[in-house]
Image 1 (cartoon, rainbow, N blue to C red):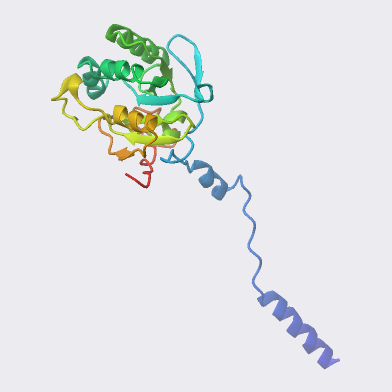
Image 2 (cartoon, rainbow, N blue to C red; image 1 turned 180 degrees about the vertical axis):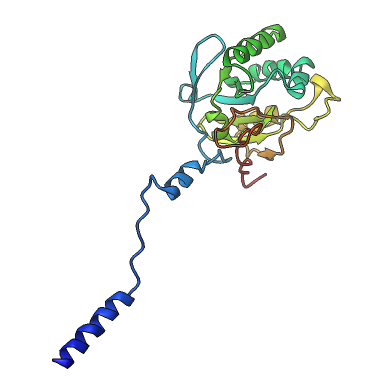
Length: 240
């Protein structure tokens, strides 16, 4: 009888001493929420993030519709003095014109992720600016900032070139003339990258540190007052 009690006690103690298996964390728990917050951003050499956005005239444009074309994206904010400067100098107008003269179909979009003003005011002000500049391009409204954050857009301007296969081949600065000394005569990385794509050459460099004003994304509900969440820094390609 004593031996039986001792054996039972030893077994009970052994079971109690065994470590409990980890409690599975439900995707909706803290870990799941953290994973949801992680955002992958566009990487040179990979497919560019898909998007469908509405322009200043209410017309929808999607990246998928541009298959077989070279696509240039410019993150745009007419209230940014740097962005305003490159437009007022005539550089953007000249760039759009030069791209149109190439032996390939090139689509140019100005993407507006500005959200520090009412959406209607952003759309109307941006549309008026582009019209006065006499540059006939769509301004795509990204008021919630989802597309900007998917691309890792950080500045206005921040430029992207997507090839005919939908692959991101360049991102970064408009030119090396960040002080605007060369005006509309500045050589742009965009035109150089597009020409390299047409010639079927490697795009080099495929990343140049962007410069300009920070993109005025919509304020994050979890951020402190006066702060706006900015996307992670751009992921650079192998030939930067």
